[in-house]
Length: 329
Figure 1: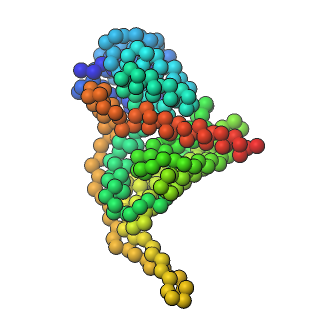
Figure 2 (figure 1 turned 180 degrees about the vertical axis):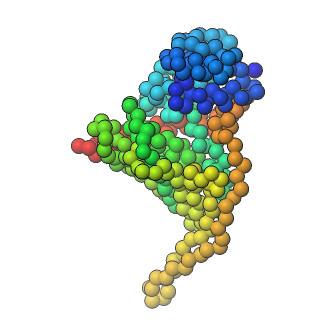
Figure 3 (figure 1 turned 90 degrees about the vertical axis):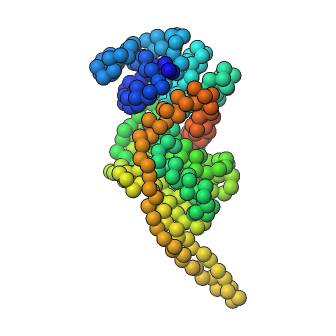
């Protein structure tokens, strides 16, 4: 049995706790938080777990194998560094940290100590995103030309990070998973509509090494909740709508060909083979993710969303911050 402790039981923490406690190979031992009301709620649900307001009760306990950090991003580095220094495998909710420097430090520390460092990019563990990857890798829609993604809603405003740091990690982790290549160019534009210090609407444009383009829009100021991505290939297209209850992925085997006759006249041919909805085996992504974390710890495997993958996301976010500040001048 792997023995685990969770630091943080606020907004997302209870979901981590519920799924972690359900894993047969994991013994949830501790939950730590400064909010005693939240702790008592969790104690009522999981009476076998020790609750504490001192996170070091988890980190200093030599019997604990895994520490899961579900706290505000500006605390991630501090908690994770202490946990790694005390020989614990670490899971951190996205994003990894709030800077490239601190993220790099954690990755190096985990590697030097042969410890697992994993980031909670949960969408990578959904059946829908896995199915998109399978279709793309099969060559069915040809080469990817561009991906557009919208992640919009009314709120929730964060106190310490802008909308890109809050929402873009989801989009960035998904496109990094779908596209085989490196990001070579980042462009970022944003608006501060409510808080003059933080962007609540932002646009992120990326160019990958093989020429693929990615266009991301994130907003806390939008009347509807939108979680939609389009993958456009040379031979077909995929629509992924996370707001759909079942038919989350739709495949359109259609594309446009261009030709030119001897007189230089251009014509277009519209190819439309068929559209279909692939079958998905729907599982709770968080359960799949945490089971993967436990498996990586037990078998010394690199996680699909490793610390280095999380570092890639933070690099884009940090560069976008610089660009947003520059564009404000």
